[in-house]
Amino acid sequence: MRYNLFFTLFLFTLVSCSKFGIISRGPASSSSEISVLGDLEGNIDRFNDFIQKSDALFLNSSGELDLVAGKRFVFLGDVMDRGPGSLRIMNDLVNLKEKYPENVTLILGNRDINKLRIMSLMDGSLTRPVPEIVIPWHKKTIEESFNIKIPDNLSAQEFQEFVKEYDNPLLRFKSFLAGMNAPLAFEFRREELEILYPEKAIDDHFVFASFLQDYDESGILRRYLKNGELGKIIDGNIFVHGAVTNENFGFIPGRAIRETDPEKWIDGLNDFARDEIDDWFSDSRKGQNLIDYHAPRPGSIKNLNSVVYARFSDDAGNPIAPGRKLIQKLRRYGIYRVVVGHTPTGDYPIIVRKPNFEVLLTDSSFSSVNKASKITIKGKDVLVETEISKSRDLVIKSNVEEVMNPLGMKTSDGYRVIGKFSDSDNVMILKVEGKGRRFSTKYVEESALNIANKGLVEVFEQRVNSSCRQIMQGFLGRKL
Image (cartoon, rainbow, N blue to C red; front, side, top):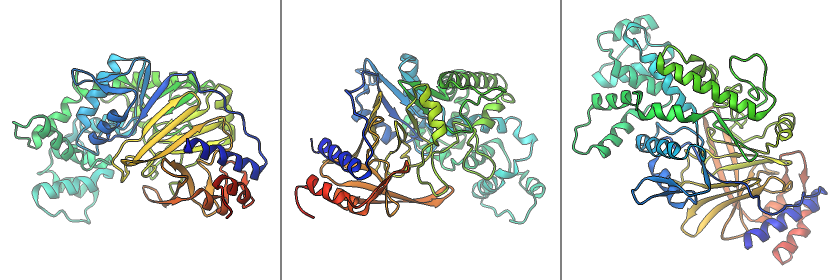
């Protein structure tokens, strides 16, 4: 009740200050209830926490992951690499997808697709030099494996000659994993295998063989990729791993003409991915168009032409929304929300709003709070609950028709309002600072009163100033 009162009054405050009207919020949508999770990256503890608190997923009497009747589940990609649970998570997700193909969606992330790239590099690897971009990781791998020091000033050709007597497929595989931003994936796989096979001695060769089995006819990675999609549209929501941008909207590799209809575009992307994955598994020299499509541009952490590696963030890591023209194109076809992973948001998911449109960024894989956020979407409504302590949650509650909503708005000193605490009238604000892959997040708990006194600069070019003071006095029930 306190939460609803807070937002009702806060919305009234914003309207009074900015003189913009509110689109009246109607009754709750009758659309499907969608449970959303993404970017687990092998974190089995977070996966289990999500299942425990989920209204959509549960463990049945056989101990298998199951789906509540009438619910939908979307996984936003990046299932592996940074934790000791990749095999078990993939197995659960694939079995769930195969059991409920219409109600379960597995979005393909960059960490999923790049495993095709790694194995393409492995084919005939010892007959080819290590790609120059991988040399730093291969140098480190060989030095650690043989306790030697390789000179730093070698040319690429001299390096290949120097390591020839040490080189082997297992070491190359380790190096390729590290070069694909998964330097601990090999050891995490070893840790997971020790859990799954406690009676076995898990040496490097056993771990390597486990990775190779992933690609077999019945291998778990193969099944995961073949069940995956680049995008999905459900009830006005587009789900992709990275972002929808002006550059990638409507673009399907191999086609000269862009699609204008989002449904046809997403269908075309999924057909493209399916064909490429099938081709790759028939011959790993094929399927390169998908590998190229998913990857970042050289020297960049983005590829705005790809729904996999585009980002809704600026160079400092601050979340941003699409421009007006792209939103108009999407709205024309009934799309009012884009839901993504990929770009780390710190400890909590973040929502960014524009009139009748919003972006939900869900990747909290680098969170210091090792709890899964419970994300539920029902048509135009979204609810995100993140446990901070046993008696306290951070809550995001939004409806796209609430034009004036403090969530996603910036304060005059550059913070962004990201959620409301469940046990008070206080809000959480965030500032992101950094560049490239390195960034830091600063969180501050503020009272609604302090936020109103600072003033709010709305993301979509409207301004709220200190005249909110009088309204906030009514909200707090006392003079300031």
